Image 1 (cartoon, one colour):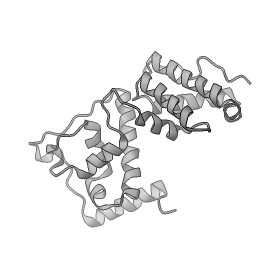
Image 2 (cartoon, rainbow, N blue to C red):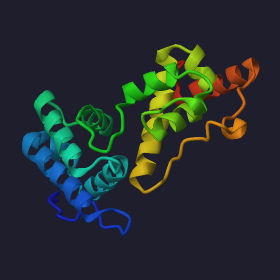
Image 3 (cartoon, rainbow, N blue to C red):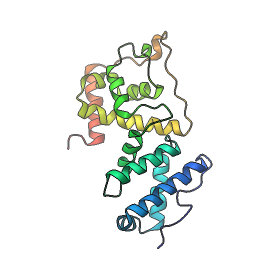
Image 4 (cartoon, rainbow, N blue to C red):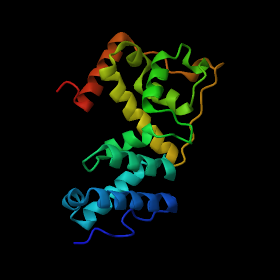
Length: 203
């Protein structure tokens, strides 16, 4: 069955036409550079279309240039067809004209930002909200091997939402209610155990 569908990424009113075309272009590049692997992985057109839609949603916060630079980096640095996570890493490593910091930079900023967090001069609102979602206590007290994957998950989710038009604002530094009160030690431990279980970090 042919996997050369020109409309494989799908058309959707919330998806910019140029982004759909960019995802199709990326998979065309992968087909050329990882020929046998590509046809082995995507021998079914329906499967390929589903994967393209998944990538379209996951890469929505990147612009066309950054996605294509990410694909180029994949091709230049790997002998294997990339996973979505590998593509995300390569796009994040390229220059970001939208002003979003790299996940690593965002994580370090969230970990090192002094309290009150609402008064910190954040490089981008998404960093604050990713830190808030992860938990300031967890970021301050847990090892990076535990806290970074959790932060990365929230950061990428929020970036995807930004790409779909969500607006993220910073809290009012003067508002005492701008930040959630810190969890107690017992509540923090319980939340951490639940997060570890969800991500299977103990396995």
